[in-house]
Length: 321
Image (cartoon, rainbow, N blue to C red; front, side):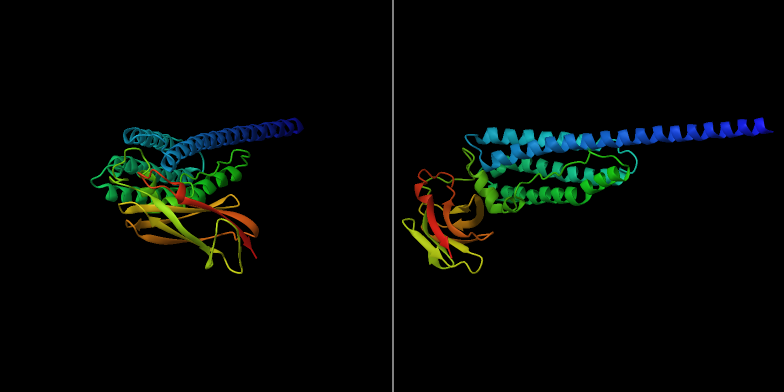
């Protein structure tokens, strides 16, 4: 009886060890699958960031790109996004990752459809006929791209990293993904119009004739600034910079961007349009409020076709008291 009891106990122990071993193997396999999934997502997110830098980099500064070259590069960015969408859809979501995968697929569906529509509208936006409507459509797609950023940061990423944490997978958290840099700027249709107007040969950006802007006056909280001396300004409230810009050309200028730089912080506002010979004023809040003596650099960014832009900018020394 004793020998039988010992044999039964040994057999039970072996069975328990086998069960624990199998469970451990299954857990290890599942964790490896989760880790591989996170690594694949991270790789796609990193490549998406590169596409974002390329796309918005050329949008902010097209350099010497012609319309044809610009459109071709936007199409390349669209193709890259299409490949990311396909790769995301092809991911095998292990374990409890199905909800996170569904959210991630929606993120990239938004990005893919937005980039496709932007690419489809780009030639028209850079042309003459229908450029205004096409530009408005592109600006609307920027909102979709921003929505994808919000969905990723508030739903997809927390769900993925939450599943990893629940399963004890450490060091494989997926990074954040922001496709639209400074999203509030690119949501402004005037900013998109101004950017596209800088593309060489864009007929939708510049009409024939003389084009040019000029800074007329700059003030803070009602105190006019002078470039030759230091201006003292009371800063009890948030400083408001008022910049007067005159259209010194022969045609109405649309989407005029005015920027104020202080302490390395650049703030922008757009003027929707300025008729030829007219002056418009834009107000920019200085946040955070500067302290002490600072240099304020103000610029009305050149419009398409502008040949002389030296009078578009001014530098002021301001003492905030």
